[in-house]
Length: 494
Image (cartoon, rainbow, N blue to C red; front, side):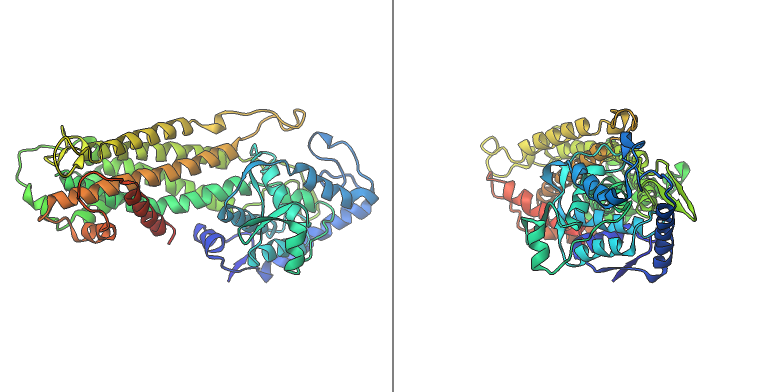
């Protein structure tokens, strides 16, 4: 059981709740602050004071005061009207993370909602009901309005949910599960849909997964170095400390450990070659920079998942309008990470070429083909596939946060475009999985050609998982690719 209080969620907690369905509860320590915040809203209402988000219109309609008898209708209307998302539905793990993060943000006690609102979000999570949320529609300020509205719409019994893998009317599913929809009170509709939880959910899960993938990718890179008769001399600890980047030092230590004890290495230790190409020699510098970017991004993401990001916020007896919903911190980091992962993929593609290119593949068969030369093309076209993926990544890595289009009649005249940044980051991440898979598949074949020499224990044990790959001439290699990919994804999601 994970207990939320608005302050202590970590990336692994998101993974446990979103994918492993760990139950969530509201920490009792948070309830008093939530109740106090709600009491402030009630006092404002009884005083008749005009305050944005409580008894006014929204966005450009901020100057329109709403009568007391229409306040509940106002909250329902904002949820329904703002549910303007289009496109394919988000994956379940993203939506479950959004619900968890919205509940955690509200639990900080700055939003003025009742405890019941947070508990309703957690009830949906714990009963494995997740709203149907289309992927497109957010500009990342004022928060992720459209995606979060689709979640809020389900809480009030409207719209659609995904249940047992199917899109169903919310009313039908809630009735079957004996879940009562919530009736929103003043400010609660706005508080549910005004935040950065869509873009933060994608960023946070991607960071968590990318850190796992980078370790696997480093082992696979080490195996490339070995089968291409490279040297680990460039990974000497003294060399790394002379530059003193944490990521470079970390990656070099992994490479040294992964290559320790390789018979392949020993077989050419006294050759005349002076140094390797950059894609073998400079792995610590490139992968290390990616690691450092991930660690920085993790810091930003963990700050944001424990942040109050709606508007206005309640402090003691004050209600303050500000811009905490603006997605710029998340948008910039998403774009930064997109660039870092794209360059990681660029280096992987160059090693893929070295594995199949007969001009540079260190006496391995041309294109790793087996059987009669010329009759068999081997893995020639997998480098083409890798090149195509890298080209797509380069297009996707253009920063979305460099753009802004005013919304809400110039009231919201600068937006982050963080949703676009986060969505394309996720696409790049899955493209990197494909590139890592291709490299691993080719290495498995190359290791077979290096026999009877063996690589290190770490590398041999890892590549035994791919023993279904056989050297027996040309055939359809796509099944091998899918099987390798499934194993790598399983390792990432552990």
